[in-house]
Image 1 (cartoon, one colour):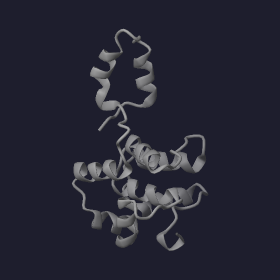
Image 2 (cartoon, helix red, strand yellow):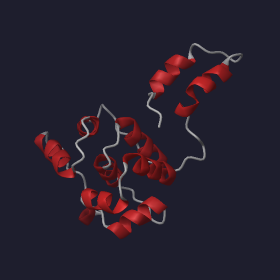
Image 3 (spheres, helix red, strand yellow):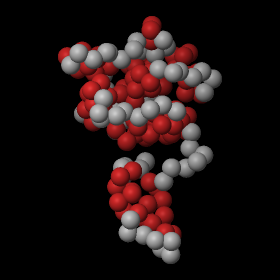
Image 4 (tube, helix red, strand yellow):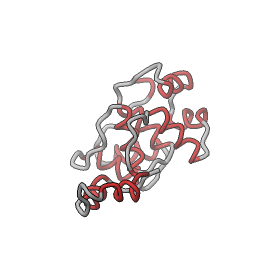
Length: 152
């Protein structure tokens, strides 16, 4: 999985021109987003890499198995970003992985200028992995907790 931020890639890219762009791709190819990469594929790759089982993840994220499987397979789609965030938090995704999953799902990434998103970014960076702890943190700073499955 790639770990360079977009800003880092942009900074590196400034050192290249049309004549040596191939060298940039050779050195940074694994950082590039594949047009064929889907939410499902990236999600499944992360699950394998982290050695997790879907059933366990859905339990931790408080998402019903049937709904969770339909989300991952693409049979269902949610408009609630919190559902995808629940999965990312319980998978202990890095901020990069979380932002990438949100993007692939067609949702806005976390934005540091929004208080709630900043809190979520900190929780992700610290690898909390617990919806309960993340909700406590959100509540502590007067922000809405992550939506529960009952509210979907």
